Image 1: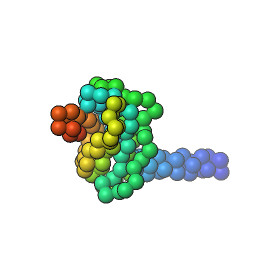
Image 2 (image 1 turned 135 degrees about the horizontal axis):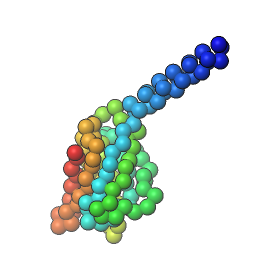
Image 3 (image 1 turned 120 degrees about the horizontal axis):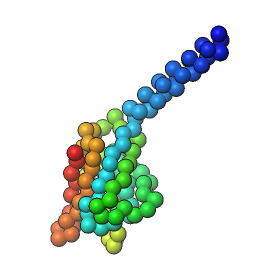
Image 4 (image 1 turned 45 degrees about the horizontal axis):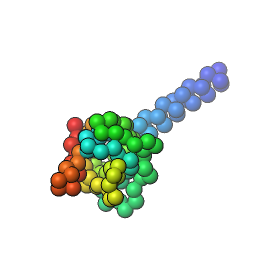
Length: 121
């Protein structure tokens, strides 16, 4: 009987931890529509000075996608995204992107104006 109670308590704690952690992170699908491979991708909360490490282990080609997890989800909606495109010497920064309701993030780039373009769905 003690074993059954222990297993029940353990299962309840495991479910609670899973539900609690699920509220702290959110997965976002990112589509590269920049016209260039993305070789660096990093995020931070708007107002933060520190960025996450590069979340890519390989370059993401144009028209390809990947999924990223926002670890501090629930602390705010505005996020900054830092991207290094292959062949470029500086970062493109997408500022104050509202990611609260977004499930898809489409990153674009206008080479004529050197302007990053971001759309959420």
